[in-house]
Image 1 (cartoon, rainbow, N blue to C red):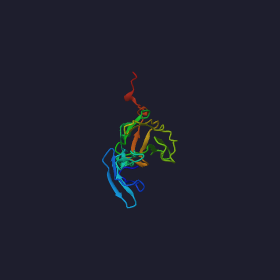
Image 2: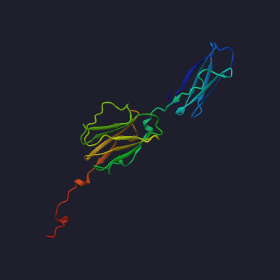
Image 3: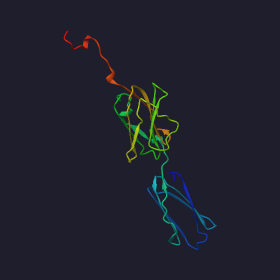
Image 4: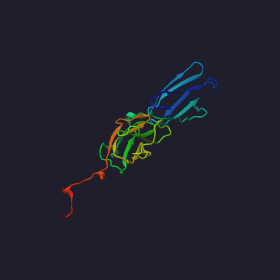
Amino acid sequence: GICNDWAEFTIDMSRAGEGSLNLEIGGPCEAKVEVEELPNGTARVRYLPLEPGEYKINIYFAEKAIPGSPFHPVFESIADASKCTAYGPGLQHDGVKVGDLGEFTIDTTAAGTGAVEVTIDSLTNPTAASHGSLSSLSRRGRSSSFVAFAKPRITNNNNGTFAVVYNPHKVGTFLLHVWFGEMEITGSPFEVNITDPTRVLLSGPGVDSSDE
């Protein structure tokens, strides 16, 4: 199920004889519960789970647990990319050099459940692209022929955060797109300028160390 969405079920007591109905719903938070007993011997139950996790539903009729009770439904949060953040030196506009590892963290702890993906587009060569994902639900239609970068590597830290590493092989300006639940997160795309100081050349008598 999904958090913040009413969950419903029906209890049929029409062939159970005389008795009172009681139920208890517990979980990560207190859920609002509505019970409507109908003339045909059934009861319609609605409850509103506000936090993700496993809930426990105990149902009693005539002070006895009904078959299958307790029940253990699990609810997840809807992916909300606007609550997902990314930070780290690999997202700085300047400072990433060819051959260095571009590293950053994606924080989804407040964003619910969803697939994480990173795509990289070149402003220098718009037809090139690279992508990495941690889910089979990654965005389709993206190529991975971008020779300026190795495929971004995404590691699940198992605490709601993900470590991302990419390795630039070419100078230029690039856009790093961070996706969560098929949507770009706040601040994405991030513009990164890749430089290569080793390609800077000096010449002239002012830097000549020869004894002439």
